[in-house]
Image 1 (cartoon, rainbow, N blue to C red):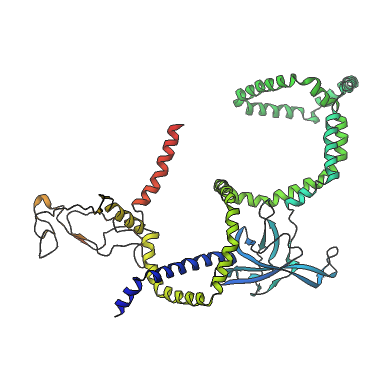
Image 2 (cartoon, rainbow, N blue to C red):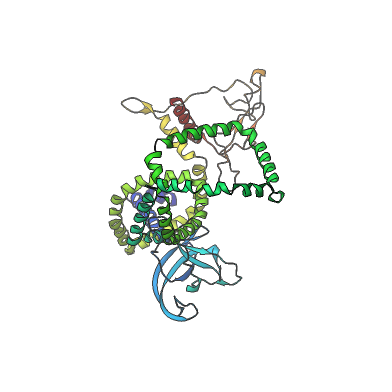
Length: 499
């Protein structure tokens, strides 16, 4: 009676189609809701007060050490009556802060009470995320607690702050700086000649200078010995040094072509350039300081990105292609979301979801056992491929099933007729083949089994009966998986041949 009822349900196309549509709609609904966290997954809810939300929005990531540990669910303005004053932290003032509500991974509970928070840039496009610097206190925040604003650490210099330094006065000063550097070295030949003329007094007092150098207390002998040791170190690379001077000759030859008037003007205008630098560098110093701090903050990120730089480059290339298709996709999100919301609010749909949950509960053990046969061993794909291949030949009327008849060996207990025992040998020329090999329940990586794809991978062991699992580990690679691994290697060989 029960079997007949199940057969009638399976024979109803309307019911089968309705169940299929319901499963697809539920899957789409769960995927849409995944942006706000998967349902039925426990989280550790916490809030943090920030002096400035600094472009944070709902859905931004929360990270610890660069690893995503949660997301921001909402941001609310909050008034604090007893907060440190911005200009004088020792005083208490009334101020407006941003309260950031977070949902974190449950394994972070409890977060140490000395944890600090800071808003960081995720990219140069203005995306932000909230970084938690986990402390070491033995006390922790309970679920629903709020990290006070005193734990906020807004010291990092963001890229937009660096760009904001280039206001109109700064840009005008930089232009003036470049102009003065160019003018400082122009027309200074006469001054250089005058400087050479002033060397005459130096030559007149050269005698006492040489006397001082000859004095033992000067240590000139040690200096010469050090030069000798230096020359001994340089001797093995003398040829390299010789080539260096040859290259320098080429370089100076190139300079000779622009010595007049360009290099001459650069030298003659150097004093004016130095005066301009003395007046300008103090203004540039904050920019250089903030730039150094910025790159210091970015160093851990660069170190973390270096191992996956090639993957990031490929993802950016593919991301550009995806972004070109995003406008059309985004235009469909709003009506789709509204339809899903209307569908979700329908009372009949709620009852259907409950019925679907009741159906999924008894199916879960079955699916957990069957799923590895496809996800690990690829048996489902191989089954459909083989069925398609066996019916690939036909005529205008229909297709034919292909098969090959194999004659069993003529030996005792062979499979060509009734036997009193499993095939276990016979004639001398059949000793290696007339043995029964039968495995009714091979390992398919299912729960409780050895993690191997035994079906279709068993090796024939001559000279003995094998009933059940074949000894040894047959691995988890099946035919199509081998092809997918070999194919890229063939392509790379073709590319090398073209080069």
